[in-house]
Length: 330
Image 1: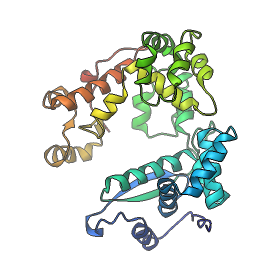
Image 2: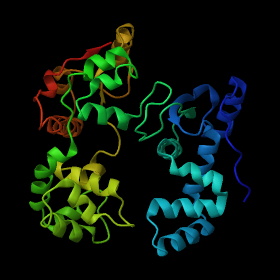
Image 3: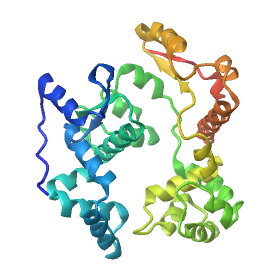
């Protein structure tokens, strides 16, 4: 298979429209809408081809993936090696970039749902994902969180909009380690069979978690004790947080798609649009308690999980009821 073409940094509107045609989902052009996603790669066509390659899972790809996994590589590394064998190193390298991976997942979801959305990749510039440096006047979200956790809000003043700075300057940021005892407690309350009911738990992983939560008293030690080449740190963290929040595989099955739109804030000039959305959106909008009261039982159950998660994030700071949180107008 020939390697995919290198992406270009800038493209004209005409080139973009042609790219949209190549990435189309079969939905007539007049009914399509554009879905923009920031990515290290600025070409949606390339990301779409990678998404199709992952979806197809050809015999060649499956064999290469199995070979890489058997050699001891983690799943992300094995997938990258398999794609490298199929598509070439340059294109496989794109899968090592976090926002490209996210964009590919969006494109896959668009195809799965046959949604009338044309993917548009907006090239990420400045500080890259997880970068600790300030580059070209910008900071990564990780660097911003680190600054806020360290009480150094001034470091981000000139890298975010003033409205954002005003909202977070005095924010008491939550460090995941502050939830260590809560996470350990939540896991120790669960039997192996209950741990197996958590999302992302499979292949007997529940037994390793059951043992590790009794041998560790901190979140970092717990996750590192369970982590392996097969089970990434991100996956273990998700399992732990799902245990804390009481989210199970059955919750995912009961709520496979969004059932409401939660509006946290808006630009002042966009407020009329919120009113129009409330009238015309296919899902109910929730901006206050009165909106919640109008939800059906299934949507209420999902929303209550949302509220519970947000309020648990305040365990080490000033507690504010999510129903009393002010609507942000910028």
